[in-house]
Image 1 (cartoon, one colour):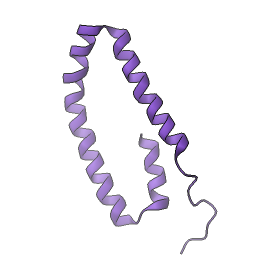
Image 2 (cartoon, one colour):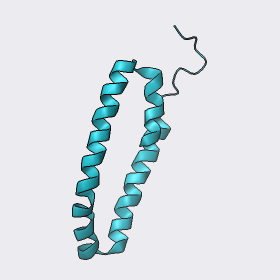
Image 3 (tube, helix red, strand yellow):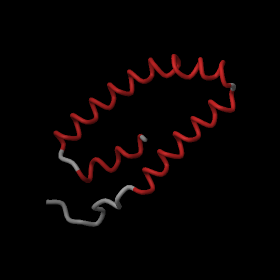
Image 4 (cartoon, one colour):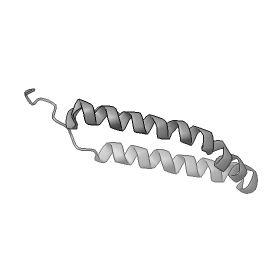
Length: 79
């Protein structure tokens, strides 16, 4: 999902980007804390294949979002 931040520079002003980036970094830090609490019991309860399938699904969703993102404003003059 980090690659989606590259699109932000083309679509949003600096103030909006700064606020969104700060909030998403905070959300990332919170998810780092809770991910092991969710994924480790899943690993022990359902096995490694289930965990790998969930992680592959998340990566596929992120790749799909990236592929479906708009082309951006490359080539347009800066105002």
